[in-house]
Length: 311
Image (cartoon, rainbow, N blue to C red; front, top):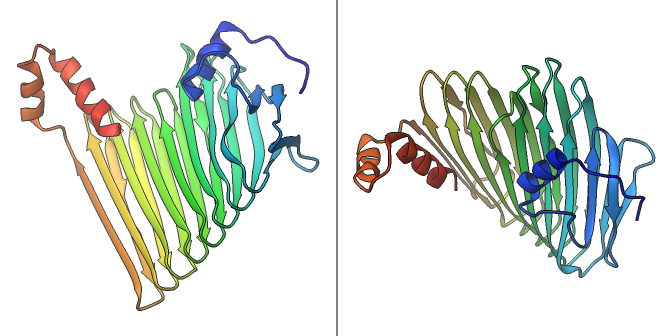
């Protein structure tokens, strides 16, 4: 445990948006603000330690750990800052754990604020990991709010991982790179939920290699592009053995926004079963009319439809 540092009200609001809890988390957690550690706790089964070679932390989860949650949120309130952090998760065999991460940026200046989080996961045999990452930006300043995450996943035999990447409002630009390698019997579910507005840009690149027999991946992208924003979704699933892969992209486009979906699949084995599909369209008018007959305004009806779509 480290010495506690005082959090401002805006810090607490950002943390609540990222973790869905108020106040400090319980159990193992690491909270980072403006490139510095705020507070850290380890548990009997989960050790969080500062890296010695790069800025960031190593999270070591003992074999057999079940029912625990690790929180590693980051908040940025300093304009002109570019924060880069490397976090590595070593998940032992036969674990069943949840990891809550993400970054919230509050920028009230004309200078850009940026956070680039490089996360690497080593999932031990027969372990199960649920990972939730939320990104959020706010502030009345004109400075950009930039988030460029990198996620690397190495999955051993029989492991499973559910990853949910969520970008809420307010992020000016983002480039997300996700890479995964799956051994025999490993199962990965990647779910991406994205909302852009104004002139924001978002690019998501994915590369998943199915290297072990009976490995599988499901990639699901749900996005809403509003105003003049631009989105690019570029997933690639490579089947190198008898495996299963499914890529699905669904997007709602509004205003003058642009969405480009380029789902790709590559098979190097005749027993690889790979599917991809993509759909882009507007909100159906009859959906809005139906909700308006229930007493909602047109704007409220749109918000309800978008919320249901993303969730």
